[in-house]
Amino acid sequence: MHWWLPLKGSTFAGEVDGLFLAITIITGIAFVLVEVGLIWFVVKYRQRPGQKAFYTHGNTRAEVIWTTIPAVTMWRWGSSAITTG
Image (cartoon, rainbow, N blue to C red; front, side, top):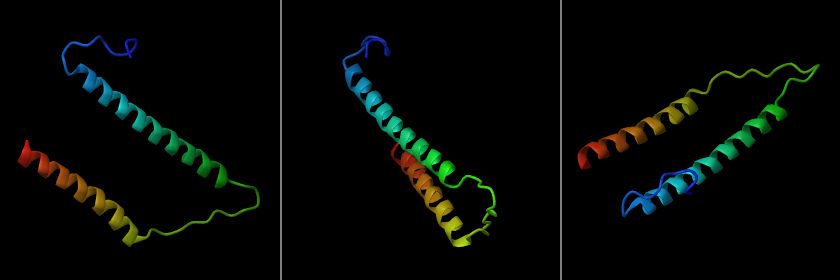
């Protein structure tokens, strides 16, 4: 990756470069999967003539779950970082 990152400036630069590359590949794959899903949903649920849109009211239980799980996860990560850092 000499064309992208600067030359090694320390003995552990290779490990850091490898970690950077791994994170870049993982996030790149996640990005592509999300974009494919987005395009699939846009095409599948596009507006069609003669069809009335289906409106749904919120599901409180689902909303509480998908709000609580990330909030608790972030709180635990933050509190563990404070206590170990």
